[in-house]
Length: 163
Ligand SMILES: [Zn+2]
Ligand SMILES: [Zn+2]
Image (cartoon, rainbow, N blue to C red; front, top):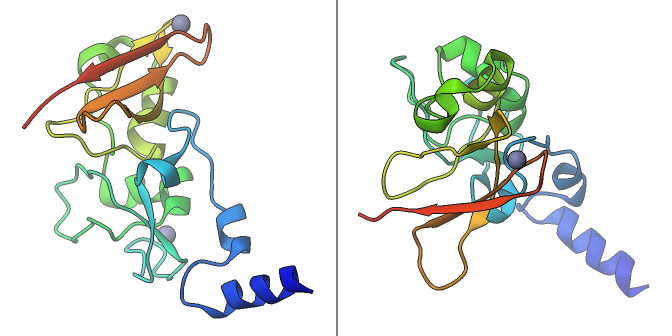
């Protein structure tokens, strides 16, 4: 009965339950936001839905709205676009390579995708006339490399920056 014991222990702690993790939204352009740290466990209430759902987005938010939004938006309100609409916010700057991708891809990337934290402002890469998916930070010991994969042809590309 050890597995049942472990499960009940998990469910009784303040950390997110297995059910909540399984229920997290997925992001086409950000493959593993828990692994990258873009989504973190938190009891903070979301500025949009005003619920404490166990997770918040910890990456950059671009908004002129006076409401403090850092670490205050839940992943669900980002995935469905309601956070971006409520606060006229974007999470990925639509300049550089993604300035020229189709408008619907820009909408999804800018307003419904969790970004990541870099030394400098994020530069999202593009390939095959679409935004690439952010895979992970590089694992070669450098803290400042960003790995992307093309959702169409599978090409991997990396860029790096520094403080
Ligand atoms: Zn929310
Ligand atoms: Zn491609």
